[in-house]
Structures are given as structure tokens and as C-alpha cells.
Length: 394
Image (cartoon, one colour):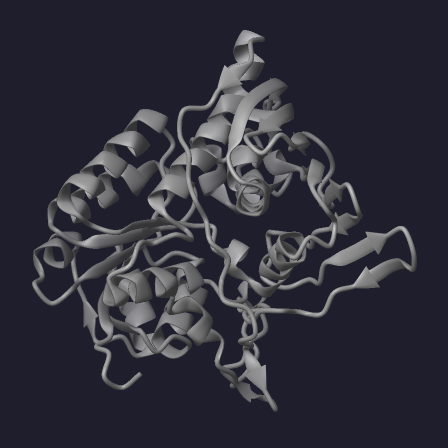
């Protein structure tokens, strides 16, 4: 790989999720050269630069104006995504953004059109779909082990109002359960089964929430997480498969989740798409339930060594960035966490809202193609970092 120049990269947004991104971008991927960090709170940017050995702390205008930076990673909150991405695209930078793409579908369409017009790459998380768990599940489906997919069933619950006391950004647009957590499940469904054709749904808002954790809120404080916090949806995929989705953010705190794909020859239990690891389980007519060994790397484990960190559980954040950086250097399309994929994820999520509000079926307009990663490359080899990055190259 020594003949391939690294992609000079900057991170914009130095909040909680930046810890795992910055560590991985600095140390896990050959293709990335992380040279700068940026945040409206300059002290936060300075802390991250010092903690992870990043060369420069820059303002957002300096990042946009820099001739030295090719790729910008947007880790700001969802409500800021549109402004940051547009600024970087207008400045001629490739851009990769944390989930969700934006909080407005028309704005997302505008950004896709702008990236196309300027010939720039625009990538969108969640990149957990590139982890070992979901990629192995895709391999099982692609090999025909469950036959033709007939249906999928997904559910996840969480007390999103209570979570919004701890993570205050959840009180803003994009904080409801379908957008904050459901996007991982929708993204994985789309990655495994392809585009959705038609959406029908019913939904409910979050209740007005009174403060419970007095250390983080005043006793008199109350608020309502915006948007649809409970949604039950029926999906028809372009492939002909049908899907059932239930996201419930109005229940108790302990998360329950399930993800099952049914086929003509078998059933596949898909691991939690909110994580990079977790092994799929295959149920066939003979032999019962079988745990499938990984066919891919990036299982979420920390292979960088050092003292365990609180953010190790976030695993391999940044795979999507590295995959897009390889696409830039190889001159190929970004057919994984692409702008088309991100736009379709948004259309499905917002389509659930629209269907619930109007009582009418919603026909999607966007489409995408997502290729699986090359199998047979792994994250670890005898306790050392393995060759998983080779699966991102082509």
C-alpha cells in the first residue's frame, strides 16, 4: 500500500462520538491521514487534538479554505448537518457525515445534487452495516442459504424521553427513537434486502417528559422529544419481500430488539445493527439453530491495544470513512455508505412519518445499490491487527 497516498482528512465536531472516530482514523486505517479537528467550542477541539495527537486545531472556515484537506468528517448534531455539509461541498471537499444525513428530505436531495454537480464523494453513516455481523449476514443471504427472502421483522424499544435527560441533543429534531436508533435497523434492512418500494404506517409522538434525573435537569423542567417516537410500519421491498417494523420510544429504559429475515429455505437471525459484531444465527429445516462464524473483519473489538476506553464499545466507527477514502483513491464509485443509500434511508424513515400522519401509503422515489465487502479478510490475526482494510479497497 506504500505507493498510495493517504487522504488528508479533518473532523468537524468534537463531541462524545468523536473519541472513537478520532482514535480509529488516527490509528486503524492506513488510507486516512487525520490532520485537523474543529469544533465551535475551541477548547473541546484542543482537548481532542492533544488527547489523540492531531496536528492542527482549525476553525470551520479554515477547514473549508484549506488546500491541504480533501475529506471532511462531519460529527456535528443532526440539525447542523445541512449547513456543514453544504459549506464543505461548496469548498470542493469530499464529505462523510454521521447519521442522520439531515433532518429534512429536501435538504438531503439538495446536497446529493450538489455533490453530483461538483463530482464529489458524499458518504453517510451508520457504517455498522460494514461490520462483521451484518456483512456475514449478507454473505449468508447472497449464498442462498435461506433461499429467496420472503419477509423481515424488526423491532426495538427504548425510553427515549429518559435518555434525553442524559443526552440533551435528543430534545432536538432527529432525537426521536426512529431517527436516533431506528436508523441503524432501517440501514441494515436496506443493506441486506435492497430498496423499499411502498410504506404504510401508524405512529404516536413522545409524551411531555418531566425531569427525573435532578443532577442533569431542574425539577421544574419539562420537554417533549420532537417527532414520531412510536411507529409501526409495513414495508414492501422492490424485491417483492415484505417487512414489519416497530420502533417504540415510549416504553421503559431497558432496550429490547429483534431482527429476523425469513426465506423459502431458512430463517436468519441478524445481530444487533447498532453494533459491529454479533454473529448471525441460521435456522434450517434440518439441524436446528447454527451460529455462523464471521466471514468478514471489523467485529467491533479494540485491536489497537492500550488501556480499555469507555468508548471501545463503539467498535470500528470510521469504516465508512475509510471505504469512501479508498473509493476516492481508486477512482471507483462509493457503493457502500453512499449518498444514494443515505437518501433512501431518510426517505424510508420520513416515509413512515408521512404514512402515519396521512393514513395513506407512501411510494418511494429514490433507489440505491450497495455492494457487500470482499469476504475473507479479518480484523485480528494471532492477537495482532489483521488485514481487514483490504476488504475496503475494491
